[in-house]
Amino acid sequence: MSPVPRVLTVLSAMLAAGCATVVPIEPVSTTEPTSPPAPLTIGPAAIDTYGGWIPDGQTLSPFDMSNPAIANLDPALLTAVQNAARAAADQGIDVRINSGWRSTGFQQRLFDDAVRTYGSADIARQFVASPEVSKHVVGQAVDIAPVDADKWLIRNGIPFGLCQIYANEIWHFELAVDSQGNCPPLRPNAAG
Ligand SMILES: [Zn+2]
Image (cartoon, rainbow, N blue to C red; front, side):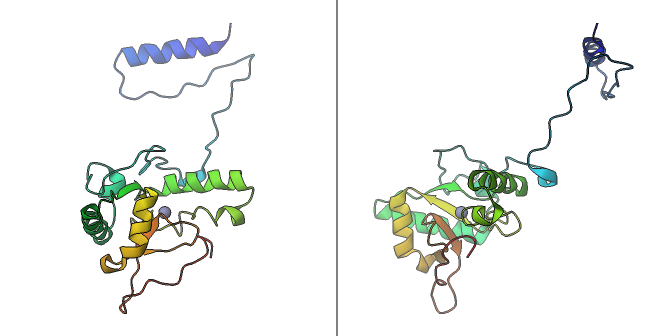
């Protein structure tokens, strides 16, 4: 008989008895190899792989402070986006956020997924910033939806301090207007 069920039985008994601390129990001997623990998929940065995650297709109001993706934004950026959203609404444009603040672990997961998708870190960097450089991780970037709102903000963002940053990301905005009232030249992508 495999020792594994016996170990589980002991653990269950401990839990049922209300033990606050469960001490891992090594099987004394086994004739069957136990399966190794599942490997970490995103490396040591994986403290929080979901912080700031918003399900695909879901968008948030820039006034929804109940979600950490919004609440953890840099206050100056959040205020700018809210002011822009009010102005856009007056013109019939609904400004939504589909990504804002992201935890380091979540950004690492996105980057690692992109490395798998594109086959190399160098190509992945054109589409997803690493946690070390992502402005989302420090709450200084928002991704805006839908496309109508992106286009409105590209045309009208400067009075609010908001700029498109990457030519290949019409949805990604940061507070980047300089003292002359200009946005910086578009960078081709997140790697450029
Ligand atoms: Zn972005």
